[in-house]
Length: 394
Image 1 (cartoon, rainbow, N blue to C red):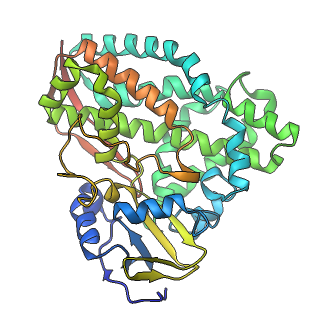
Image 2 (cartoon, rainbow, N blue to C red; image 1 turned 90 degrees about the vertical axis):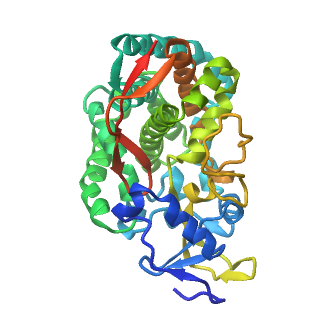
């Protein structure tokens, strides 16, 4: 890759096991090097400071998603035509299909039912005393809520969680994790094409709405499967990641849990703080369509960049004491859900689920205690736990 002005460079591999175990010292090194840093191991330019990440997320004319948001050609080919891999005006056309279903008014109609289901589930878990916060809570709630909303047929949808968990690998560089994820992507698209046909959808689900849009001619028929995948994958894994991170942060910061219990009105801000500190999606890629210049450095058109959400959300230029978990922090300007054209369309639903879980927990859990070592799931672009044994004291 040739840059129009000399950029600082680094041989850091943010996708190595060591970096994925604790990415934040590596992100600090990248931020310290400059606003744009060439990653020599991957031949891309890294954006890790908050200001430049905001630029990339809000300027789709300069930073395009149409050539894919992954760091390998196979991924970008596989996800061609999906919501995350299109630019306006095509992106707006696809996004409009489910805009009404994900609008605040529609979500409010589901709120009471979701809160009731979550509260009963949490009460049952807490009555046990100890449980795995990932398996029994973080995974259980999105599966119960999202699968019903998506409206996929029963056959095969028990595999959807496993496929969704590979989503964070397929969009990384062409390393071993990415290669191991390829069969799952093939299986997912095959299932969507052969099993999730119009006649087999559960009436009223999101998938039915997508099929109906194709029948009306709002979108081409060939867009149905990619669009279904756009909602099926991130809706599961990112919410699971956020809920798991929330429990771990409160186990590790009992004073913050006490503050939340005393004042549940802090829950929306507390959830923002969770996903600021532990962004479910750590990185996505773009390709420049024209020269981008910032702070005296420049990258030309047709350069692939990687946008590190997780680094931007801990940028000391933006946040005081950025590594500290503070449920009272003013943090609505985090980038965990993206911004601009590609801001997460399902973030309203994710927030509703997370807020319901936190409200239920504040009612039923007096204090948290660790019941064993957490285990992290190493994934190329998502930040997730695989195991989190806890004791919930009533």
